[in-house]
Amino acid sequence: MRRRPDGVWICQHCGASLKRRRGVGPLALLVGGLAALGFGLTVLPPAAEVQRRLTGLELPAVHDLPLLLDAPPQLAALLPPPGPGGLEGIDEPTLMDQLARADAAWIPRAEPLPDGRTRYHYKRRSGDPQLSVAEIRSLMLNPPSFGQEREAIRELLADLVGVGVRIQLSQPLKRGAAGEWDPRERSLRIKPTVLQSGSAEFFQVLNHEAIHVAQSCSSGHLRASPRPLGLSEQVPSALQPVLNDPLYSQASLLERQLEREAYANQHRLGYGAELLRRHCRPAAGSAALGLASP
Image 1 (cartoon, rainbow, N blue to C red):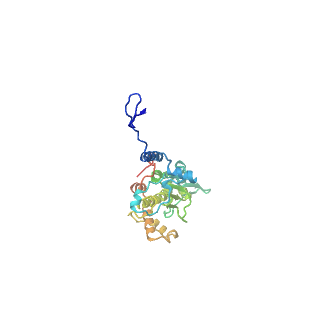
Image 2 (image 1 turned 30 degrees about the vertical axis):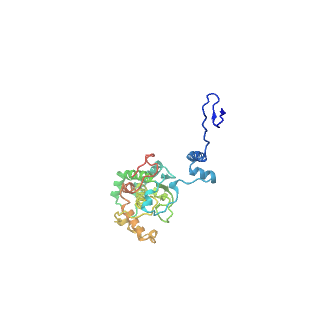
Image 3 (image 1 turned 90 degrees about the horizontal axis):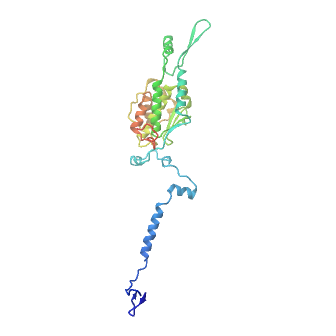
């Protein structure tokens, strides 16, 4: 190119005038920088990964964070579903096998005596009447199978796991208790010796605590303080003395009402499972695990 006398630059081959090219201004540079920054933000690692890299600490899962026991209804509706539950320390087949063995101990047995007489041995629950010889022989010929109770236990375990309850065969924290529901830990604890009492008693303890779980769910979420469900409070006469046990001597009126609901309905097969389905939300991943859900 060359410059004409009037100062315009022209192509030295064709003689056409040349236009001046504008430089890249500061605004264009700023826009380009922001675009690059925006792209960079899209590929940043998750916050939990950043936290781990910076501090070396692992953040807990959302469902394991401590929650207020009595969240307002609006907040409770926004809470994530609880984490998976399950049996801890024992699997279901082993549990059922131990219950079946304990059930066999309730079948009366006869002991022949040297003088030709027969002595009968049988176990009797608290509050049960003494059996006659005819009733004992009838039980020996037609022993109870406890099949309905074991099936109800299986159903109840599936529903408890399905809503995120951790089921532990461990000593309850409350002295003298056979079972215990701990909302903050979402743990249902059953005293290990209850297994030795067989399916009927184990079901009632498990069903009792499942009713307490449903009482928590009715307050908004699994970890909430239990509240009454409006169930029957007609406690069977054989269980009336239980509410006068020192275990409940310091209980508030609300706590005693919660216990009356549980004791009045703990014998009802399938009832605890029904209440769980009615009041509790499914746990995270329960559908994928094939667990029962409400």
